[in-house]
Amino acid sequence: MKIGVVGLGYIGSVTAAVLASARNKVVGIEIDKTRLDSFKSGEPPIYEPGLKEILSKNKKNIKFSSDFSELDGSDVVFLTVPTPTVNGKIDLQYIFSAAESVQKAVTDAVVVIKSTVVPGTAKEVHKRTGLTIVSNPEFTREGTAIEDTRRPNRVIIGATDKKAVDIVDRVWAFTKAPVIKTTNENAEMIKYASNAFLATKISFINEIANLCERIPGCDVEVIAKGMGLDQRIAPYFLKAGIGFGGSCFPKDTAALASFARENGETMSIIESAIKVNDERLERVLKLLKEGAGGSLVHKKVGILGVTFKENTDDVRGSQIVKLIKMLRAETATVGFYDPKAKIELDGVYRFPTKERCVEDSDIVLVATEWPEFKNLKITNKPVVDAKRILNPRNFKSFKAVGLYT
Ligand code: UDX
Image (cartoon, rainbow, N blue to C red; front, side, top):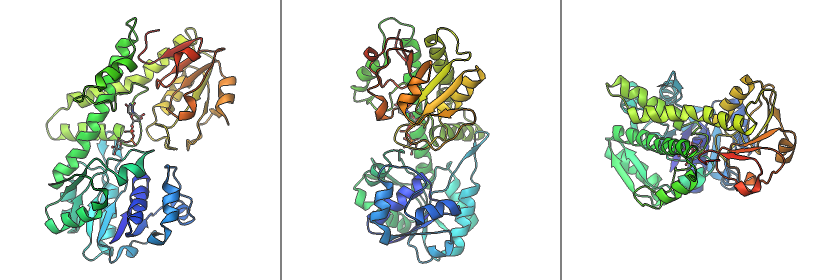
């Protein structure tokens, strides 16, 4: 098929790459010139494991452009543009403007909204443009995005037009994933409900972690393992830590809570999950203060990892970036090491290696699950593990979320 992908962020670029590798002819549209040039030169502007290689291997099947008219003749066009929140409410301007540009460029393409949008959006886009809209949310994690796109747990296809549903079904047939065909609104809601549920699972275990820190003999890691073996609970998304960040969970939980209120319902569980998450930073700050002997005033805090999670360069919604601001308000001097983070922070030194970061600090915080931090051994200064990846036996002074010490 000829497939267009509009908006080459993490999801768009991975969707384009995977569909090109599934032997489609893909046109990737990106309006930011710098980003577009990076894709054209074969150096994607984002780090996602495997992305650069798969783009290079399939370059004869993929073309990058800022010109929407290149979409002419497409069978399917995916919209993968950002849907940010403004004051907690979803902002759909990029969806509407992308759809309008696509509408001018194509004749009878099926337009697929892959971006996360509140229920009713597909209908509104159809009303504004007359386009046939299919809702096909993604469930892709950064860091494992290629694999998640090639082998998703399920494919959700929401639309009223049967022919359009069948085309999108054919696009993803190679994944062999179970398919749910439903209304646009159900598809849109499935995405929010899934993300909100996963975020809630994380806040749940983080709340258990808070209690564990007060009870001698308790360790949230063991408790999560014991819970996760129950197949009804499952072991996933039960890792206590510094709280969820990223470009999805914080914005999607806020957008769903605000959408619910607009529709006369209060999502108490989701609102609590957000609150528990916001409070994680104070919790980690408290552990750092205790580790540093009561105060962080003029202490040098070395942070290992600032991305919102491991195996990405993405710092959007990173809890650690927020924590750094809080630490500086405490007059601590902050330095960090991260193997990939795309960030520069005013007044915060970036160490070239983790060894240097540890050496030049009074206290060390492990904040991201990068594999290279796992075997850390430090005996001459306090260490706080906010992600529970370290072996407590490798440290003399050790504090961790969810562990009584
Ligand atoms: C998420 C969803 O998983 C994906 O389905 C959706 O389409 C986009 O949002 P992503 O944001 O890439 O993906 O990362 P994810 O692995 O879900 O982690 C989100 C945040 O939760 C990270 O900050 C991560 O560190 C944190 N997390 C995750 C935990 O604190 N504990 C866990 O058990 C799992």
